[in-house]
Image 1 (spheres, each protein chain N blue to C red):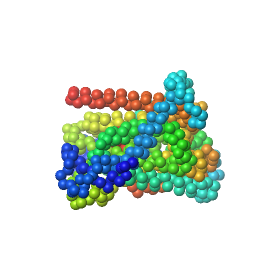
Image 2: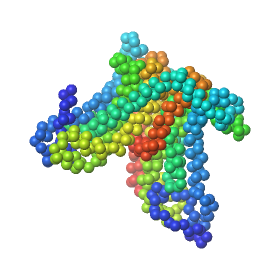
Image 3: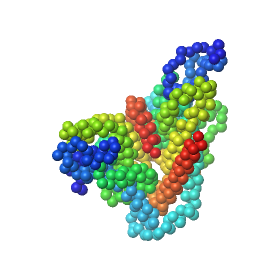
Image 4: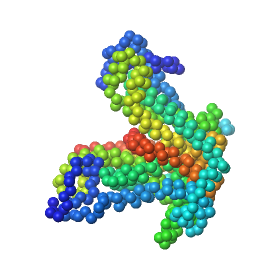
Length: 301
Length: 322
């Protein structure tokens, strides 16, 4: 180490940071910045990633006359809620919001119940056909959605689900991913707790609800977020299965709007805010769980 | 089904060793447990998952051998639909557009994820805010992203052309230019999907043993040497996975095309799945649509298996040479 290098107190080894170190003030290099050089990189990156959302919020409050002015300004000179007023007055956005909320709530509740039951069954119980059943579930993860669109449409048409909210709900009642996630989690729990419960006279069902499920909260949170994101944002399937605007989901209504009101930007962006803000807020509140969900859905492969 | 009442009865506990068919401490009441009890737990979810995947998948295979518009009597045509795939010029164009998107998107999203993960993997001030900024676009739906894309890249008053104007650079047609539209879609996919690859790489980076990195540093390795010789070998399996996963996503691109260009301009963004959707749900050609779906499934499945096997072999060979 050269003599003129400033001597910094050595921090305890931190794995997260040690992986790739920022330039350190050793071997004669001087630290010229009062802050880490990484800020120079990360700040612009963060700004770029946030710009679309900033534009979304700004535009939703910008008067139509200003949006279509040439040359355009980066920031509006005045703000208005006209876009929102128009949105709520001239569209069924409230109904679409309610529809989407219903779809997501039913999807989450059903997912949590059915997938945790099935995950527990596959993880802990012995019954004939168990392994074949689980392999079949895993195999379905390989099947792409577009292969299923046509027959599922025909099937739903035959049972009268097309153009109803049920068409959007049924595919989200359970998923292979959910079963797999819950099974992996239950396998990681020590079996002794359940055995103790059985010795104390609990039935298998009581053990499941009183002992196992309360321990499964992290996995259930992951599953709930996965289901929320998927069901709230789903577009392809509702697009195929629902043509009746009374049964539209938010995403469908929004896309439909985009076709009809191509230039009504403050209205479109107001709709965008209504559809996206709940998820953004939820993300900010539960970022840790969201990241855990993303990590797990990545590791399933 | 007879299993509806079954969950009331306990099934045998599987011990960690997995060997005990008869777990030791059971009370008489529990010994009644039917061996079918487990089905009560798994059946509801299994019926939904298999009923909405394997059953339709088999059905789609049958449909692909038929000529059917959904109303009239289906006509069995054998492999005629598959033969038609080969000579279909529109499909060939759709394949080319999909390949273009995949080539644009997959390497970028993998490299961007790696880069962002390395940059975000440190403890400096505001790091939480930086991470949030990169991650939060993940919650934006295709519909929302589509509207944002058409707005930001609007040739007349969009932010992008406004920036170019301020910088005195030539204005672009973006989504309205057949040569640029796919690039724009790839850029906005990147905006939403970078979070995913970043999170995966961040998780992988935290698994790199810190003492090895520290040892390399003490031995005098610079940051680049440490990255290539110590960190990168740990990231290679993850990279393979992320690349395959993102490729599978990319070849199925549909929704962002639907919410931005609807396949235009001049069909420049018509992807395979978009073509499939049009064939099936606009032209009501269920048979041919199913054949397209199966063709895509088959090709991606074979490609995935080949790549995975090759990677495993390469990894095994490397272990041997070490």
